[in-house]
Length: 360
Image (cartoon, rainbow, N blue to C red; front, side, top):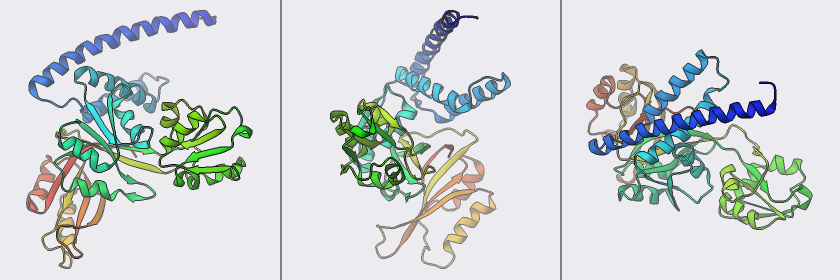
């Protein structure tokens, strides 16, 4: 190919072939959906999706392809999302409003075409799932700077819904505006916390001395900036995109390693993938006795089960100063070595879900 026109013709031809192959894939997906409806199987299978991405990434490396794993994942996660909507359209509830990082996390797994339900609280997400008005829920469970989300843990302790997937998302903040230069900006909208998280950027670009207007969410900031051409919003990328506000600067946060762990909730059990994590709630019978937690955890150590997290929470059931423990460990609840430990503590352990380990 020697000319730009020849390159464009080649791209058009490849795009035509890709479209034909995608339609062939979706035909198979339709049949998969029919089979799953007959058998009652779950449409969302994180372990299957991960296996596909791993296989394609390995094949790409063997072929010395130009795509890296992140690019392959981004492309195929959207294909998976479209396929799931063909199999069986499902409603996804998430902690809103639209344009929040939770919305961004949900869309990263379920795609732009899915039917989303924005709710005002984490508790509302759980209620929507328990009432079967939504199939999936997306809520935050932990932040690398602020620690665990206590409300999510407390609700998991008494809910029938389970964790079916986890994802770690870096928290990057954008500066979005309809103004064509910084000099024309007279106001900046954001949550109170947003201004503090971007202080270095605001100082560097001499934006500390203009009016800062706190609002209830970064999504609201984007809405206001979309209506005011002399303003800007400190918000998520998805909020800027959703409300049509051009992003002038990306990644303006002072701390660039901040990340949030989100969990996807539903009503089914995943199969064993070989790279799983399990979450449990441990309410020890002899919690007030010295060494009770050590004795409990020693069974995991003896079975060579590695813990990835242990978090104590006040037990609201027992009164006083009782505690229960939220524990993550590597392995699936149905693995033999895990079952041997769990069966020793049947009355003390509540299973919260087994799922493919996310990449943090």
